[in-house]
Image (cartoon, rainbow, N blue to C red; front, side, top):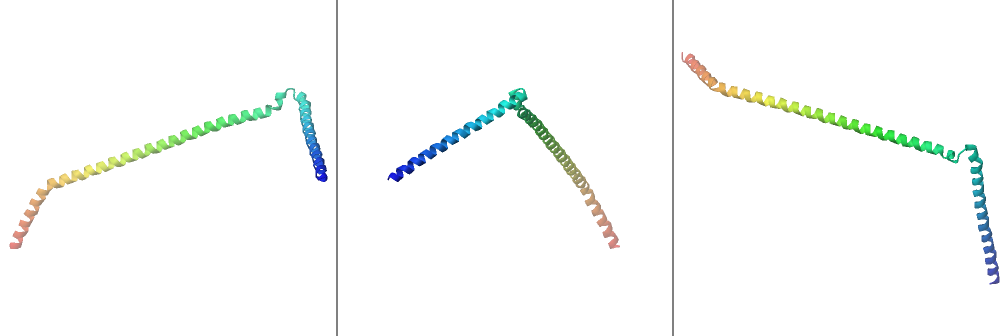
Length: 139
């Protein structure tokens, strides 16, 4: 039992030391970072200079995004225009086909009316021809 208590005390001491070492390491790294910033800040003239490249890059990306958005809008307009032109061409083609079909129907109707008008004449002509043929055959 005494051994367990001794081991527990040693372990707690070691973990306390490890925690303390970690805290010191964190503080020293923070100090190094602050030292680096303070060394470079006067060289840059202004602390905002450190962020200027990122700011310029951000502005560049925003401008590129706007240009891409404008290009996308132009592509959409172009696609809509092409689609509209295709629809117009298709409608014109359908109208031309419809007009052609209508013209063909009118011509067929006209021919049918002419044939119907000529039919009685053709019947009488056939009757006359038959009569002539009968006369010739009888002679």
